[in-house]
Image (tube, rainbow, N blue to C red; front, side, top):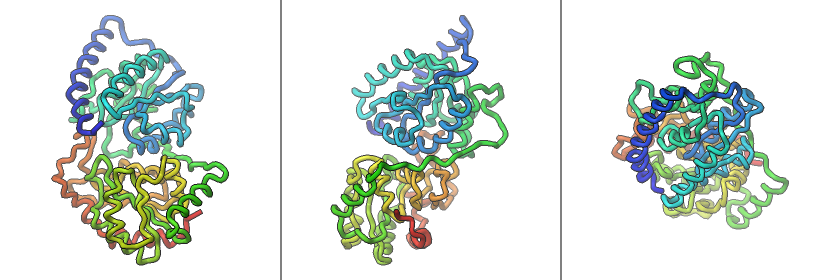
Length: 407
């Protein structure tokens, strides 16, 4: 579904549903008291619907849940399109994943009903709603019937209304990295403090695991890559992701990408433009500008995220807008430059030493927040990115490329 349509449905249907459920919850608790809570959770559901990258940032949370509740069965609910990334992380058994297909409303609605029935049948003790920008996830949390419901809350701050039925409300803190805030949600499960999860700064944000490849898998991918694009064989490869995806305001300008690619080609590197099939027109524009056999269009070439990560193993550098590829690079050792501006690396950068952030920190940056449903007030003139010059990026690229990181 189109993101603006999703926002409209979430606002028009989500607000009244959250209000109704909040009233029902207060009335039920008044008549019967709060539901009994298990002393030690045996079954925990984590709701992380919308962002592939957030799954990588949540790895430390999964590790902490396993340490804190070693006998608990962990389950995850997410959109079907993000399932592969979760499987790559290997944080829960494949049988414990609940998926929802959000491609169209006719697929979404039946999946909601199926998911609600399955959640209630599984009888979760705890549900953790990790979403910042949606109301549908908080509705799922309540309808799961779990007695302990953890989720972000605005408390007295302005922001998205998501009801009052989250009984372990964690204050969303725009000054703390998202991985740390996910860890606070684990602390909130048994917390009696106000706000929930209040603790000294001893959080353990661990590096996500490096992806392990099957015997011969990398060689097979390399053989196909160099057969399909023979010109780049034997050259250091720089991968470039110039698309902004569903949030175009996060993209560094195409003209800057063109200048960067031409300079890298002049330095003797090969350049591969990556992205989805829908990103092909922009990639072709850059390829045509470069006028070099060593600049190739790889948009739509990789079949899966795993395939993309295999290609990462044969690259020397990734230059990317804020989005999925930059988060996936945290599962590898590939040196990566990530542009931030409308969002901030202080909250969303992968916490790994191979990720290097490019951020100009304008007065209006970041402008995509939990308080505006990621609807920027910017008129499209994203100076926070435009003022990062090709010369600056080229200089940092050359620095990282001076070390051989290929397999």
